[in-house]
Image (cartoon, rainbow, N blue to C red; front, side, top):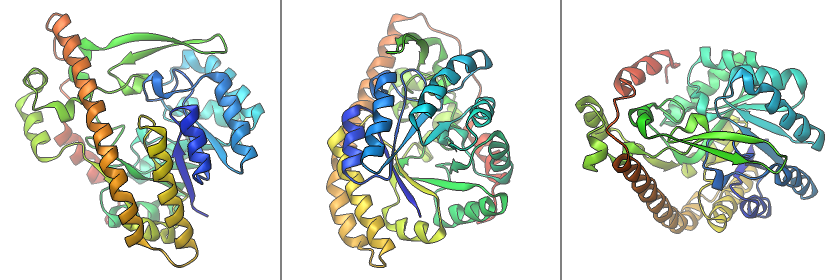
Amino acid sequence: MTELLSPGGSMEMFREGVRAGADSVYVGPLGWSRRDAAYEIQHHEVLGAIQHAHDHGAKLRVALNVDIDAADHAEMLRKVEAYGRAGVDGFIMKSEDAMREVHARFPEITIHASVACNVRDRAAMERVKTAGATQFVASTALNTFERIAALKGTADEVGIGVELLIHSNRCITGVGGCRLYDYFAPYFEERVVHDSDGTSRTKLIGNPDKGGVCYRPCIGHHVPEIATRFPDKILTYLDRSNNEIYNLLEDVPRYIALGVTTLKIQGREYPAPLIGELTRIYRRLVDQTLAGVPDVVGARAALDPVLAERDRCRSAKTGELHDRLLAKMAAARAGGVGTDWDPNSEEARLRQAEAPA
């Protein structure tokens, strides 16, 4: 049966998701996930969340979806061992070598290949499955039912489950595929975070793959100081194809019929009550669909006011991130360009490998 997976950007949000009917909730241990530390939780809280989820008939997934170097495997495995002993239900991961280590130690535990893997073709599916993943998050670049259905058909042939972000943002070339943040590499900032088990991790603020929040320069290209970091070809691309936020509510019944493994809600940075309400709306629609009576019109009427509040929250957060970036740029000497990455050629390359829709 299709699982509804809700975000837990705090213990309050985690509990809200469980109360709202999520089948499972995902959390990020401090320093190990693709979010600001403000939206991660401490080691002892992860252990408590596992127990709380199980006490209330839900599951707990732990996101270890930053780039994890071989030098960090021993520390990662100490965390994994503790969570495994506590009965964790799954790990969300990006680094394939790290997946192999976790799968070798706990072959029975579900491993989700993170959205950061940007999986959208057979080769990527086979690669993450070989590394130990039992399911993968479909690339957010797949923006039609037909493209996702084609992906699901390929996944069935490969023998791996499909997880779908039904409430998320597209990102440039798909979440995990974008490298626009590298244009701002001179303004990255290292930050050390300290966990309750005595361990420490270094986040690189500005680089989501290194555990630091993205400054979202893609939706700041109208700001002159940000725009000057991009070559003209990037500005032209962003004018016609930007980082839209989306929801797939109307297609939820079709995706359940398609047999996707998991429907996932993104949003660890949002207020806990907002995530609780989103989860309740999707929970109700999933249950109605399974009962054969989906009320999509009613779900849309309930969802739209919540989306308006979500948009206000996201806009405010984006403004904060841009202010943070601009302050870094003003305080630093002009830095060299950190990349020549081009989303046009990257999207063309990735699209060529997709299954025909």
